[in-house]
Image (cartoon, rainbow over all chains, first blue to last red):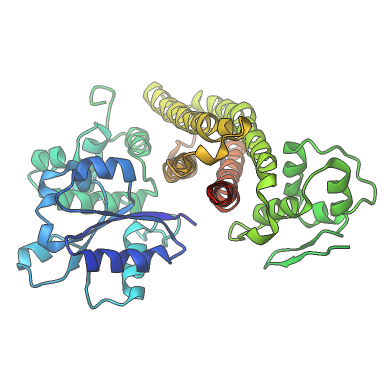
Length: 190
Length: 234
């Protein structure tokens, strides 16, 4: 069983500490850290190396300016009414009314490793997923991939999740080997 | 005799169990004897008799066995004392030695055989991937040696920063799984099955052993060091 490192980016102390208390008692969670939205988030993420970030939707704009956040699965915390566009940025959300079990199951869903999931029925990558994979193998960041393919960083993250799910390979180095073995990339492109 | 019995899905171990029964129950437990350099033969010796003979804490030894057999087993910390820390470190250090000097070179030699059947680019990329993996694991183990084990050796255990024991286990675990996936699913069929299977046996054995290693650090070494820190502050 993998154990997960969780980071909470939440301006409200009550919500942050409530979530931290729930997650600290969860055996699958190795460590829970809280980061204040006005802290140096990129630095804190590099130190804490989370597997998942729970971030309040009211500070979702932080995701635009923090490259480290782009490559980590996120769960939106909804504690107030937010614009639909903001809500749509999150594939997984919890609210202040969510039960402890709902919070845990959202985390499990987001961070489950390929071996813990059922294997994907189709292992065939879509054309877009192949495009993303090639750029990942060439060392592009999510932001650079988004710009190159003219899609949003969150769509890139979604493609990357699908690629991991379909190939069963999680590391960038492993995905590079996959791209080479499947002739998706040649020596000129590496 | 002080009898301790643990029951799991897979095992029922007790201190008065004969060593031969213990190994018969799960032959991979031999690796514990090997790493602790416990001398064979055992004759009809029980586990507690063997521990008494070799000056090894029996309660710790049985927890090593339990955690080896069952990855979800968690030790009874009430039975473990801070005096056992050097024994834990000695075992973890022997495991480091096993990974660095046996497993990694062994897997690399299987990989080399497989790579002779790949094209140049695949060969170079896969080899680099494995070398990076081996480097990452080696660096992590060296950091544990330098920041945790060295403090214990020099009797400055309470000043140990335990974060090192956490740092990149998940990354190493991901990469270990990635190697297995690449060999099983994507390596071209020209690569010989025998070498491929030999490598996979080793990779899965290494993965499982690293998980056990991580569990020993998390559920035995860290709590015992924490217990020692608490004691030193009182």
